[in-house]
Length: 339
Image (cartoon, rainbow, N blue to C red; front, side):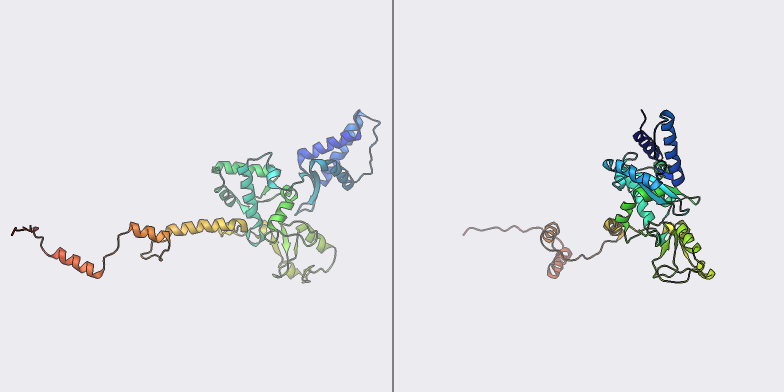
């Protein structure tokens, strides 16, 4: 006989198959699951007053032993509430391990790094720049293989690709890897909305350079429409003036200008040493050899002294030159007489 537990399992399976759903679809799926159960068991009693948040809390209690969780996030542009069933570890290796190889996960993490460390908080990367991130990956990826993996990241909901061909982080990545992004890029690319305190990769920020106020598009719209005059929640600059509205600075792909991806790319601190070593090696190969080298000590100097012949002194050189100038004479035999 069908029970309430069967409804819960059917609902979780429907969420798992979709990964991320809107608030509207979240409610619709729950209603369809209840209707399907009642069709089999008309006498089944189901709580019809349960809200979406209450339903999510009840599901999470069942998912906790499995290290799974239903979380919510708001779409950064539209503000639509999204629900997703995620792995509680929050690590890219665990999240992507079931669908991607080790090299493909390394490729994804390299792309995420370049998106998070983009110039002027553009939080996006061009197609060519994304493909370049596959070059250091071992085993080596061909260009067609890298393009295929990039398309897979998009279709799986990890990345977004705009009409300009730029990649950015999708809501699934922000939801499932939010903890990883915060721990990895905190104070170095990771920013939060001043209003909702959620991660921000597209929105707007105050034009006052020392000010740290940043808002999602929908947070800014809601913030500005609730009052006739409004000011920056941080520095108190007047945002309501028409002239000041135009001074707001975009965050996200709108901030990406032509040539941004050709600029020197930033790297995290743990990879800067590797980059410096590569630069030093290249520089050393291009640098011409010096005529005189610095004096060496210890075994290195002793080894060189044994390998190299000593240079003749000035007296030895002049004597050697004189010997070379004189004609060669036959060797004389000394005869010893007996007395």
